[in-house]
Image (tube, rainbow, N blue to C red; front, top):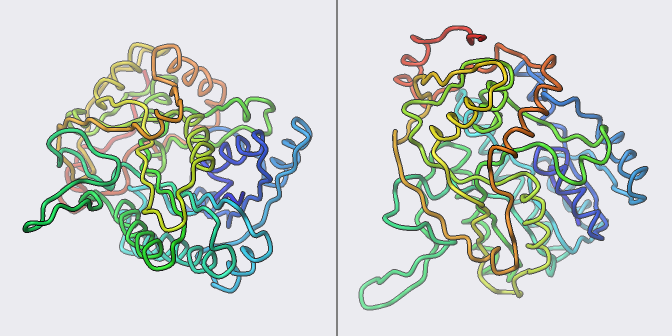
Amino acid sequence: SLVLGGDGFCGWPTALHLSEHGHKVVIVDNMLRRKIDEELGTQSLTPIASPQDRCAAWKEVSGKDIEFVEMDVSGPLDDVMSLIEKYKPDNIVHFAEIRAAPYSMKSPGKKAETVRNNLLGVHNVLISMLEHVPDAHLIHLGTMGVYGYGTVDGAIPEGYVNVKMGSKDMEIVAPYHPGSVYHTTKCLDNVLFNFYVKNDQLRITDLHQGIVWGVETPETARDPRLVNRLDVDSDYGTVLNRFAVQSALGLDITPYGTGGQTRAFINIADTARCIRMATENPPAAGERVKIYNQVAECHTVRDIAQMMEGLSPAGSKVVNVPNPRNEKAENNLEVINQNFRSFGWNPVKLDDGKAQELVDTIVKYKDRLVLNNLAPSSFWGKRQAAACLDKAEAPAVA
């Protein structure tokens, strides 16, 4: 299996999990995520080793080899063609996209680069598959954000909906309603997938994943050198992980707006498990793009903030702040996820015990926190920027 973007937050633990379960794994990564840390003046809260040292540590503890290739799949097509021709993978797991909605809205240049990187990378992979491994299976990590929030009356389906056009009953891809440039690229990825399945019978699975929380998996916990990255800055830190940091260190816990946004969540270990299950259940050649909703549960941002307030060892309090995003203040969310359930998936659920484990991990690495990157610095528009900057001040420490 090729794991594109295998040095990242989701890619690294997935690479280990696939290796543990018998896959011969090759990681491909251009180190962009680490370079963005340098650009933003931040770092992973956990001290992550180099890809080479990570792979060597995995060999020591597991006896299994993971190969690392430094390459940009959004770069020259010939490079990607040569990569696919050399390894002839059965599975290509595609994480190699700029993944943060705030970062994709940070500036005109970031918007342009997100579109260029994400779409060109996906298309290079599709062309290379078609030429060299037309029977391989592409597993792409998408996002629940393609559906939007508060736009559907009832449960969000797994990718497809039944409609009537004139007198004809049809099943079509569920309408897109993206909330950022990043989310928009994931919608456009799916358009490309549908074309190449229709035209060339490629085998593709698109995973619409919820917000990921947690840091450790059974594989990363086997050696400190295998630790996963943990992002807590306002551009790349997911909401639950950010709140856990604020709770652990006695900072204000800062939901955006009312905190009434309901979102889907999944634990990082389940990300890896679900991708393995997807590799084990590929579509047939010419079968439509398989779309799975990769989510475990739904919570409001407000409820998560209150949970973390209750667990704070340093007396953190919930303090609502202006929302840098252009989104509904409150929404309901119900998500269908029967496909993975049918494979026997029993997801990790968020409770006080799991949240406490996350807080304890953060306390262990608290000296690595960069405080000045916690407040929002990317805005969906001038109105949001004005509201946030008017209220901006350094994080309060209890």
